[in-house]
Length: 312
Image 1: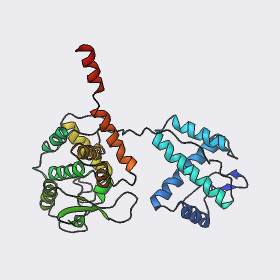
Image 2 (image 1 turned 90 degrees about the vertical axis):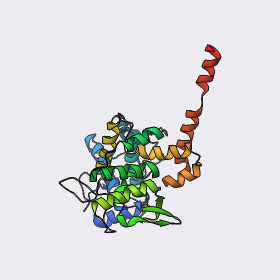
Image 3 (image 1 turned 180 degrees about the vertical axis):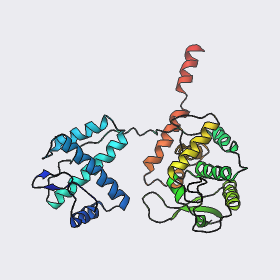
Image 4 (image 1 turned 120 degrees about the vertical axis):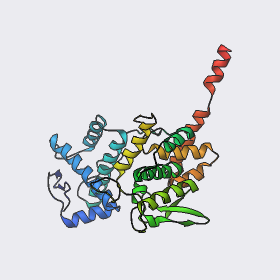
């Protein structure tokens, strides 16, 4: 049974397993995937440890605020938001169950900068990244196919590793890769495969000798787990490896930068925000607008106009 700190008789006990029936009610209240439930449960354990370390048995609103401020000292704003979201949801549940009042109501989270933390590649850099990959080996064919796919479609790393050979299907008059979108349970979304990308994937699969539709589209070449499904870490490593090879060694350039690259190059080459939203699978168009606003600033040549006025 998962452990969750339980509130009892107006105090918080430590290291008490939540009874199965209560855990079921907690899981039902969250109404999310098992992974999300586990993540929130882990976050509540973290909060409970904070209370225990500070001798807090009857937490109040100011204790939640102090916890948030303590997180800010060693965690990024997005991480603080995640931990605090779990705490707020937990106390919503305890209030609904009549166990403990909702002391986290209206507690503000950390302010998150809406600008992207990762850079994107220019079209020239993206071309150099791909053309520099040695495709004379199976690993090279795979790496090229992966990076070409991510750069042209903006697929998240998790979508790439979950893709199977049989997910390559037709969509209208195009060849497409169907994938499981964020928050979805089935592979109902798809991205179209441009001809060079489709050819790269098929060249890799031919060299690999893979035809089983249920096999992972991309598999590990490591001795330890060769042929098995790849991990997000391995794809991140592949992206960094090839970025470094062309002299792009920056903490702001990662596998996720390829998603930003797809979005940015799409907008720069005439796509609408709505088309880019659909490409990336954003539920909220405001997320896509971050790219648009960034490009508006990049195209603003005010500094050059002012300098010409001063220096001629």
